[in-house]
Image (cartoon, rainbow, N blue to C red; front, side, top):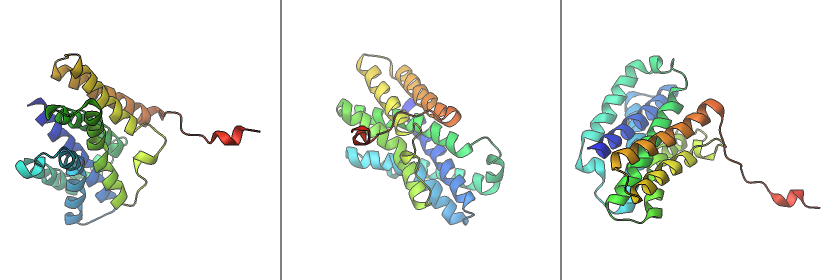
Length: 205
């Protein structure tokens, strides 16, 4: 039940980000629905295909209904949502925190290794946003210097490690999701980033 709730949460908040992008582009309703659905289910679809398990929204159409409801809401009220402080980035942050845990948990549940589980968490948390930004011709957050993929990695990694030492799943999910949200929130509010690559040959002789 817990992880299904996380799955629904991840779909909903990523669908919100897709709808916000569509509203900013002033697209029609079908394009709204396309962006909301693609962003909402993109990461989870990649996860299930890579894990070789049934794709979650094919088995449960409720996820598509969530995307439709989000789309209808934003079609009428996106201008209200835009009045919030950085709504796109915060919805993205919540999606990352939920989906990094859910992706890792699903990989663990089918018996994959630690590294595969962490990778699935990162892929689930970031792929929908990458699709959204690429199709909208916006700079993907993944290539910006602020913490983004690192937050997903921290969430997925901490969940897997906590699970390995016998932490109850609900507690591991809460701690891991909170960690990912704090890191991504710090990037949004304080421009947190990790040191980037530098060409060290420039400093020689």
